Image 1 (cartoon, helix red, strand yellow):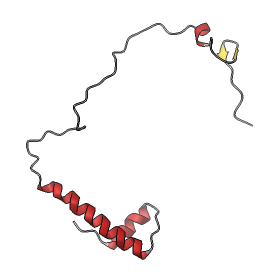
Image 2 (image 1 turned 180 degrees about the vertical axis):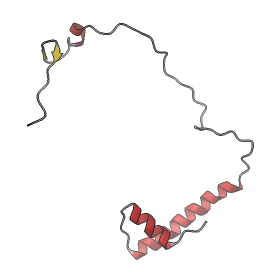
Image 3 (image 1 turned 120 degrees about the vertical axis):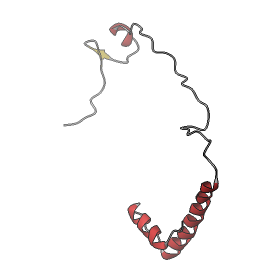
Image 4 (image 1 turned 30 degrees about the vertical axis):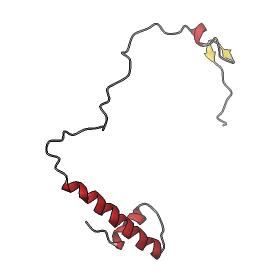
Length: 96
């Protein structure tokens, strides 16, 4: 697969990037080299390779969910810098 300078111009426009002509020529060569390298993947025989979502054999490391009693209002507010009427009290951050 070859890439043209027009492909690079179109891609740059979509990405809202502005390049001078020298940069466009350099990017065309670099992107062409990248695409040639990626094309080498087509040479691999992947018929007996299972599809994977991750290269490592990972399993879920989270603990099982357990229903537990939550904090009481008094416990939740115990370390609050300021509480008012049984709620956390914070400074107003939205002006009218």
